[in-house]
Image (cartoon, rainbow, N blue to C red; front, side, top):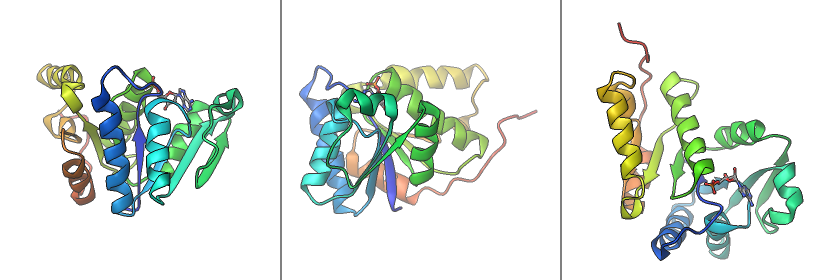
Length: 189
Ligand code: AMP
């Protein structure tokens, strides 16, 4: 696994644990020589992730829509920054540049990004692993809801398990590095 896209808040959140786990993930990926692909911003957890990795000599690739870059919130010191026109182009390019995906705590942008790439894995548009870093139970309600979706017959158990959930940074990266995803059709008779 050469690169992982990280989705995370453009704010810091209200608990120090969110910033701590963000920096820890940056250190873990740099130590494994895994390139970080992310939204290219200089703000919140996104900026902290990039700063921590760059300070340790890691490679950080940003993909940002012109509109956000223009608001002068694009990170200025990245290994590479792709400026694209739309959010759709951003997410497609981030997915193309990455071998897997991890969501740290964040808001609706983060939620949308991880769920989108998970649906692409479910549909077989790619076979890249997805993970949630569930710090302080931040994602418990989401994982509970996904389990309800499965109980109600809208999400198979197999596809539910495609979203790896862990409190451990190194544990989650290990899982993603070792996971072989075999496509299974979503529609079961
Ligand atoms: P949220 O989880 O709602 O904070 O959203 C994170 C997402 O917000 C990012 O992936 C971007 O889509 C968007 N975003 C907000 N501010 C920025 C920024 N300064 N740079 C890049 N993306 C941003």
